[in-house]
Image (cartoon, rainbow, N blue to C red; front, side, top):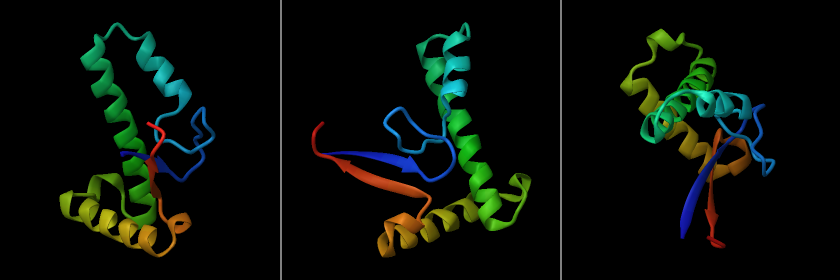
Length: 99
């Protein structure tokens, strides 16, 4: 069993599901002179920034005011939403049995 995460939002993946890393952002990373490990970390950092923007908006706090506690609290709230109604959550965990 493999788990993948999809985010609700405006950006869409090639499969049609939303993502926190746009095709344009991924393209910029790929065009960089970074090695494989640096590109991975760069993509992770960009997608984390995009998620932080969502958390900031939902919590009504500037990104600068987010800290580990507030971020963990947001994940707990989102998990509760996901358990009650997957469509109300920001992060939508899916089981990929075909992998």
